[in-house]
Amino acid sequence: MSGKTNGTSFELTDRASGRSALLPVRNGTIGPAALDIGELHHDLGVFTYDPGFGGTAATESRITYIDGDAGVLLYRGYPIEQLAERSTFMEVAYLLLLGELPSARQLQQFSASIRYHTMINESLLRFFNGFHHNAHPMAMVSAVVGSMSAFYHDTTDIHNPRHREIFSHRIIAKIPTIAAAAHKHSLGQPFIYPRNDLDYAGNLLHMMFAVPCEAYPVDPVASQALDLLFILHADHEQNASTSTVRLAGSTGANPYAAISAGVSALWGPAHGGANEAVLAMLEQIGTVDNIPKYLAMAKDKSSHFRLMGFGHRVYKNFDPRAKIIRAMCHKVLERLGRTDNPLFELALRLEEIALKDEYFVARKLYPNVDFYSGVIYSAIGIPRSMFTVMFAIARSVGWVAHWQEMISDPAMRIGRPRQLYTGPVRRDYVGVEQRG
Ligand code: SDX
Image 1 (tube, rainbow, N blue to C red):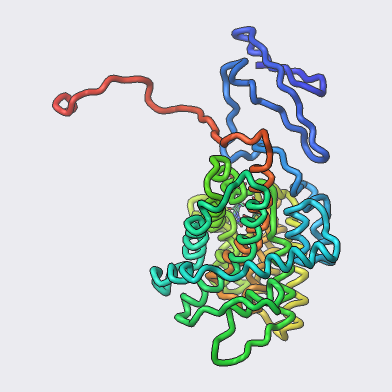
Image 2 (image 1 turned 30 degrees about the vertical axis):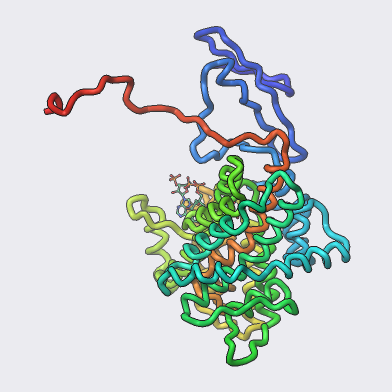
């Protein structure tokens, strides 16, 4: 095969057969262009091969842009650093869903709509009785979110924009309530209903930590820290869980079921489950003296140990979110009077030592969003088993934004990748009596 380009298309020629394919180049607003290979199999009889989709643009999107080499993250064009500094999670949710920052009135209306969808059907609460108290909260959240498809199936027409909007608001509003209910179930405590006088993060903290016997004043430091973490986790282009939601949604499946699939995909330790795994890893390392031993394990492929919270498929520089969270740790721990936080100190030393180690430098393995987030979740009282649930609450905004973008695209087709087949060639059936 050989190829040449004129900038708007790429000609690929199979020297053996003399057949050629003209592959158009599709340009985005920023970032790499994409070679449109839609006709490649038709013209040259070959597929492209890219396990893990590391070099494949599966779709066109206007929501989030990442430059992995420069460590840039933009939500609808706005730098994550500016949104983290000046915005709120509700405002960012509006931006990701609708593409523009809201006016004060639009934000007020959007926030009110979310607030008035936070209660869940009482029957949904009864699902929790089917779980043991030691069930992992992500398993409960995935199951109960999926059961929303049973409540909102016949009344959800995915081709009706108003129905799509209600679906989006219900998911964003109800996942915190479901998350808090999962936590309460694991404690054996009564569920706490949402309150309309609290903001999004404060409501979650109240539902998780209040008890019927006494008032629970929401700590503004904790609420503000959680709101900022939600902004940082809200979306991230075509990550594994968002791609799962897109693929499931592309079949026309009930959108609540598609979101449940996203929750399940996020749970993996290679993805959102890493934040929980980082805390377990830091506790396993224990002291700074042990760092060299664990770095050696991380470099030894036979150990199957990885430095959790390090590395990223796209970022080959600092994950900008990790930088913001690391700075946040200092502020939050100070304001909570928890400056003596051994796990944070250990994380800082681990980062410092790893980033001087040739193995990590050569592979451009930097701390990612999950490396420091658990330090803050712990400091504000979130139990480790709920860390990934926090990630799912925030990422529900990205999931519904991408689902909306896909479903409302008239050119949408069912996702159906092909494969490189390396199994047996055709062979005939042999009866068991001849098999020896
Ligand atoms: C998230 O996609 C997103 O956008 C995800 C996310 C989002 O917001 O949605 O950003 C959230 O999922 C962050 C990532 C959280 N996961 C972890 O922290 C788990 C630990 N990191 C990894 O397992 C890994 O880095 C991945 C999964 C994140 C990325 O894996 P890739 O891109 O498939 O890279 P790879 O496994 O091919 O690694 C390349 C090399 C390998 O070594 P060599 O074969 O070249 O010798 O780097 C090594 C890997 O062994 N490597 C690590 C490592 N990560 C990669 N070695 C030790 N420790 C690590 N953490």
